Length: 143
Image (cartoon, rainbow, N blue to C red; front, side, top):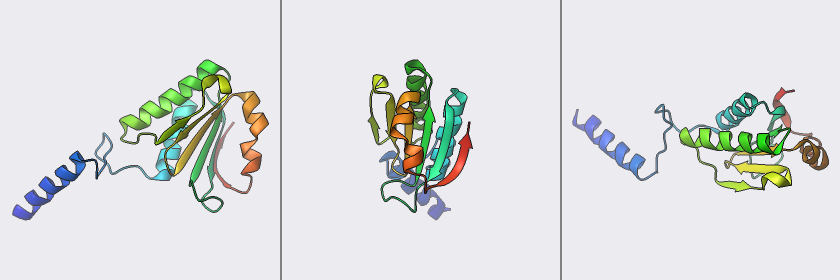
């Protein structure tokens, strides 16, 4: 009983210092694939088009998964970004970095193992990340 109590005190102390992170549901921090799938789910809810989840673990050293999607307007691109960022933050997964401006047509959220790319149609075609990373394993594709 004493050991269990000491464990919970120690665990709570680590949680309070941010050493152990939990989601709102009390589950341990989400894994890369879970973060990527959640980003896909949120993008789909916001009517993003041409959503692709790529496994890039064998091809690059800076990420495990790419989520690539398209918003048809600046407002939609911003909404997709904001909802992914806010929802994951609520689940205990804040973005490490955010890049781009809405008027640039390419926004990026960096979650360490997962990079989320949100494009306007013109910028997605121009940068052609799908083609650039064509060797990656597609995990999921939603047209």
